[in-house]
Image (cartoon, rainbow, N blue to C red; front, side, top):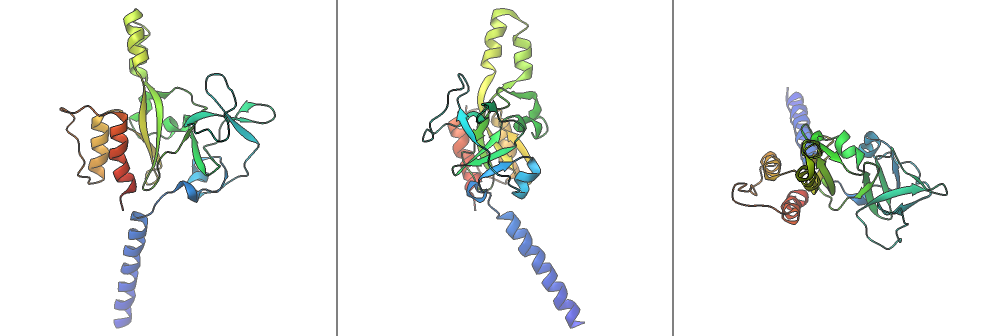
Length: 222
């Protein structure tokens, strides 16, 4: 009887220990060895493939970017054919981690798919790591752009204004990208984290920089 009780205590204790470890687990860029992570599953499980001969080019003219230049969004091209790298979920290179934009919408949380990526084959640098991965991306709300392009000059201005840089996090627990389109999205996320940083959306306009700093607290929280 005593042995069964001891075994039960050990089992329950093990469960609590496991839960605590998962709860406090950090997801760091430095944990990803250099190479390709071809799929989301490869990325989650850190199944790396050898890095090909690639270089970075800018979005506008496809000019090669200097190795020491810090750029948050660009295309990877393969050498020597100079073809855009496609269908690779993430690339770890030079101590940085980059994720292909197309996957932001493919693996978006429910409701975020209304926002269309502008350069789906471009790669974005992970800017913060910890409890989540943080990136930024210019997105267009497809409802706004669709209405705009069909309502003349004024509508064209509306469509162009629909393109905005927005914060994104990758949530390892859900294996989804969360796009923060507005203050309400931010508050829903903060509520799920039992955070005390909830914002008064009726009284305050939040800039991208302000949202980033609020999310930084949750990303780095112990």
